[in-house]
Image 1 (spheres, rainbow, N blue to C red):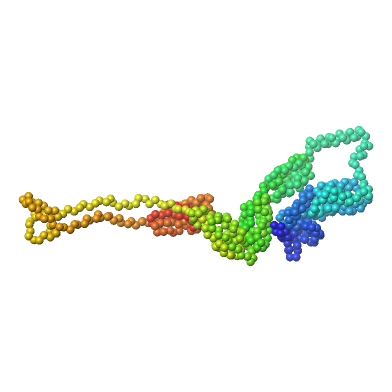
Image 2: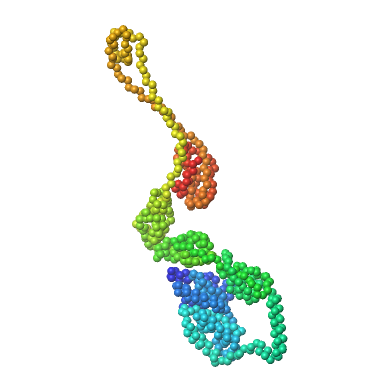
Length: 576
């Protein structure tokens, strides 16, 4: 990430025509000096005024630590020449404004120096030493006995206390050669006033103090809403009010700025009263992981976290095996703490040039494992098809391209994964028609002749009666004739006439759940004539938590059932 951070830092300064611009708002007039990682330039701000910008080329964590130590010292010293300090990924700089006054060298050349100026100079030396800086590390100006820091040079290496003391002694050595003009102590003439006058004056002053305490002067509370917390408190305390902080949060406001004050600006209050300032301090949020996303997906993910997309830099993705249009890296990093409204910079791949890759056999892996293999090979899973299977859900069943086939890096990958089987419940068939009970037929008995007469004609089997009869007057019966047995007639099976299913009309009605899974849903009706679609593919967002019903009744034959399918896979059934 070191090279990427350096690349991002270099892109923070751009060219508009032939004019160099810092951070998009400071037009560089000329470069004054370069010391290590710091470049001091004279610039023109948006309002047309001249400023000095100390730009830090931060490329490593050590460089970033140097800048943060410098910023900490500036916050403690509050130099008069400082107007702004910017610290965000890819942009680290401080802005200084010109000051008027006498340089320190001119003061040291004077033979007589005011006591007030010398005391202020020693106080400034102590303040700088407390932050690890010597007097010669700062450009100092003296105006009306006040010593101001017009510019503080950054230190790449910290100074030891001994080094600071030696440098300050060398800088202040000219003070020993000159003379210091003592300041006149106020009120010294009172020592010549008679004691009675002194007592009278004391009584008068005491009375005035009591009057002020009982009836303090009333002043208008200035409006500090929108200002930085420290500057707002300084303005109110200068007017004689006490200040107390409380925390709050407001969107679209700078962190650390005042979002409310109580009492409001314009209110008249006696001096010494309390003013409560509400400082914007929203809770920190976690930066989402954007790597491997395209630009649109990254923008949506940032929007969900109330963050914004910052600068987008395009770099070659060959070394990282990142396909074209996908995120290689991000600043701040994923899972780091950030504030709402903070911008995130992205490095986007321009593609992988002249490289081939392949995938192993992904069958049997989970979808997450297969996608990780595809990413490692520089490929992108852009299509997933679900297929009902007895294997665990989300198990890879097929893949395209096939295993070990060499393809160009960045090519798409299609996976077929297992989905749980779903059997639609069948509609009860009702009572089936049963055949009538079997009744055996009554056997047919041969009829006996009414008046048998003897005959002289040859007896044929057909002429022989089936059952001989005996006469009471004869003792010898006629010989039985041989007859052909008649096969039994099988019972007649009643035939059941097939019943043709009748056509009827049914209506579809279904309430889709609020947590309807994403996908496209269709509705078909299945009857004895097959399947036919009654609702075209519709996105889940248009169906969730809504009631769907058919505008017209569907004509069906026989058993009918409505089937709701999600992306071609059965999702639910509705029995009319």
